[in-house]
Image (cartoon, rainbow, N blue to C red; front, side, top):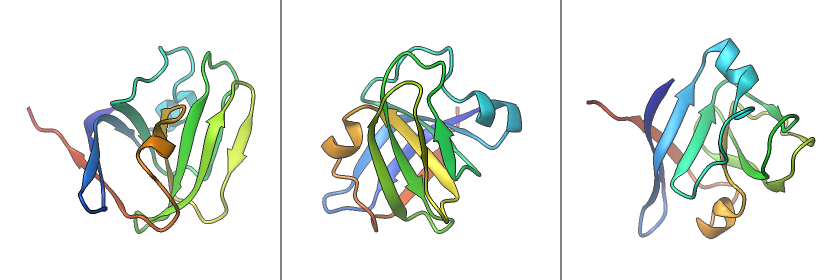
Length: 119
């Protein structure tokens, strides 16, 4: 997985500083299963991904569904373990700690950009 950050196109701009990014089929299927719950500064961007499940997860998450152009299409707040969420037309998802999307004021229409961190 690549590591980077997500920028939220708001005034003033906001960002999530520790976001992993994957397009790998195995990593996309596994997602956060078997991993520690995310903290407020962490996220997982999965692409392509129009739907998610939380089977086998230990904590609730927020799921931000993103269009191919990077716009938020839908936000599933507080998706508890053993649940499913989908969004027609979504190209990717950003998984966050439960409550983080609301705290960051993520709403449909906002533009998100992921940038890779280079060591």
